Image (cartoon, rainbow over all chains, first blue to last red; front, side, top):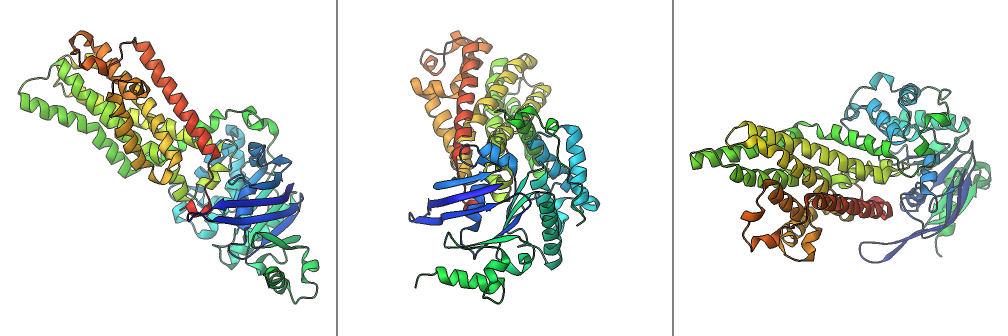
Length: 245
Length: 279
């Protein structure tokens, strides 16, 4: 469902130097699978996810979502993808219902389907009780759920989430990750980035660890923790092994 | 959070044909326009709009007070042209069109719009529709209030002329301000003021090929033609108007707007905003 091969992103920073944000990253996420993209701040997680979401153009390499190349067929890729960014970007004045309606209209859902879809998402995301309250008065957990609903409004088979739990408390994180696990169960491909390893350790099917824009380790939890006390230690070891001597 | 068992798949026939592969998602442009109009309905924006509505009437009233008589049709037309299709439309479009991209970047909503199938172009074109709709509504209201004041002799006969000029001003200048909005989103207002001064009010008054590319030349020429002033314009001033028939002036504004919007859409589709440019 999501295929990334030798993806590279270089860009020129404000001071003129070339930033090598992503250097030949490759991985895949199959339908019905949840993959964690792990890395420290600045490792290249967000840049990789933004290339998948067609927000940034790769310097080289290929990325496909649902078989659609993000460069050759960005519109096709966008139809296949639900994207949740680290910042919810939920307009304060609008209600969850209005936000979901607006984004459903962007996908051109017919009016009947639109209302059914919005009501369904509000129920699933436990937002019915606050559906008509301005988003500025919602908790951070509720706002994140609105953001997830906005990404799901067109029923995409693949979801990409950039640090979706960063603004949530423990309970909010648990609920959201449980919800994502259910999405995976419904056959969707889920790729999420985080640096809060403990939250996703037991949830993801596989992990991709990136550091300095490169994949330094990848595999199932069992494969990665072999010889280590846990995923966190395996992560530190992978990152340390990638540092220049 | 409850269970996911009802995230049902949307049947393909519930999606419009355009979303299944078409090139021109008009519905999403209208969705953005509706969304942006909703955003404009805030007390500060409404207060500014009210100011725009009463300002021309206040100036007319002051002019009549000074002259101690009702204004002639010609003088009224000149004042209303300067105040409404020029000043009110220009200011209204500066406030509504310039932040088209910057607002989304600052609010963190850019990524959520840009990942939709027709997101970027819909954002620009929808904002354009909302901007010209909003500005034209304010300008028309200003015209109605000014004419109802009754300080211009035969003032109501000016309405068709000024309505036409308002619409063309909004269509042309809204498209003109789309370019700074996508090229320098965070400095769009300053850049647009510069564009307005340099392109519309400097190049527009240079009697050369360059002024053919300005909206102000078309509006002035239409005003002269529709008011029947052609013979009264001094020979030196005739260099500042175009003598082609009105349909050519109107077509020129539409072509100019279409080209500017096309270029702006292409730039926006091509542009990348790193995360550091948001918020």
